[in-house]
Amino acid sequence: MALFDFIKSHIDDIKSFTQPAIQWRAGRFATPVLKAAGVGGTFANVMATLPHALTRNDVVSCYQEDLYKGFVATILWGGISRYQAEEISLRNDRQSTLPKLERLRQLLRNSKEDVSIIDDAVASMRRGKENSFYGIGPSFFTKLLYFLSFGLDLETRPLIYDENLKPVHFALMPECDQNPFYFYVPVGGKMHFAEFTSFEDVYVPYCKILCETANELGVDVTNLESWLFGWPVTIKKNQPNPREIARIEVERMSATGFVRAQCGIEDLYDAIGVSRILYDNGMSDRLPDKSTAIGQDQNHPIVITEKDNYVHLEYAFAEALFNLKRMSFKLTKQSFYSSDDRCYDKLVFKVWSEDSAQKDYVLYFDITIGYKG
Image 1: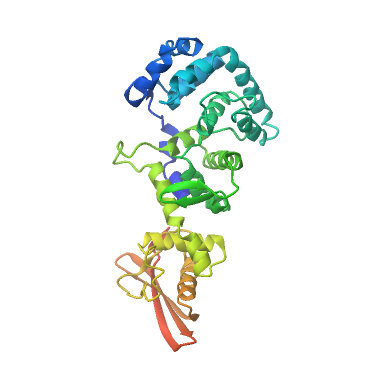
Image 2: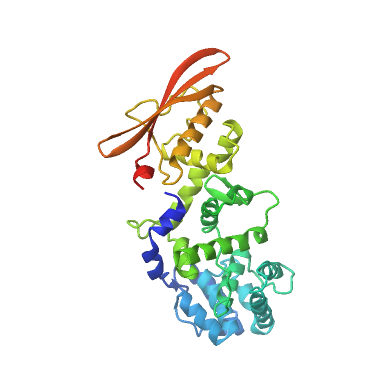
């Protein structure tokens, strides 16, 4: 299932979703928190006033009370660095930090008229820039901007973006007629930025997609983002995890480059569709074997899991297969049949090559999901 369809099927869950509170003094955070508190100063003083468990709403309330208190709460809610805890506490004191937060909030106000100003805000937090914070990198930039933007009337608002949300952006881009491979290269289960792509190139487009998706579905974008962030695989094991759905969707599209380069499918969205078919049918590793008989057995049809455009994807898959086999082809017959509440298409082709005479080649497709969807 495409991520967008998964989101649509869980709107009630999204509307009611509340991310659990972060126990910032416990577990893996305990030691760095003690280090940060032990150095004294304004950062440590604020730490002492915070509840031991912080929700997103708690952090928002801290910002409403005092920008610097909100800053400290964000660092602890997001997980203070275990390697730089003392220096983060010492160097991000109230006197040096508060003017930066005020400048960033003004930039966010201005972004209502020009959303690219959010990029300016991100760039201003880079090391050595006027709004840089010691020990705070890009994933924390977005947490700060996210909380600082509460209470501002913004059509596109800053959202949290990190390694868990890169697959979400990648998976949603085709649904918005955007090329995910323009920004990302999925390798070994991880998302890397494409060559010449920077964090600033990706961040605002990511925020736009989530804001537009939330608006289309009638949900609060902050609920959508926190729900899409998902949860560790060790908890809520019986519930579909958006984090895992996004990861699988990346894998479903991972053969797109091969389909375009080796199978001659130039249209990006056709190539993505074929890649999804390959993954869903466990054929991603077998397609390069040109001798493999795929979908020729009536009892083992190629399952198309897409609801939209499923008939066109039959043709795109066939074209990819025959191009890979270096065979010319022509569709000669198409027939529909059903059996045991399943729906099927049978496509008959004439195929030939320079080394072989014409012969019939049959492909069977299970189109139940699209036909009944």
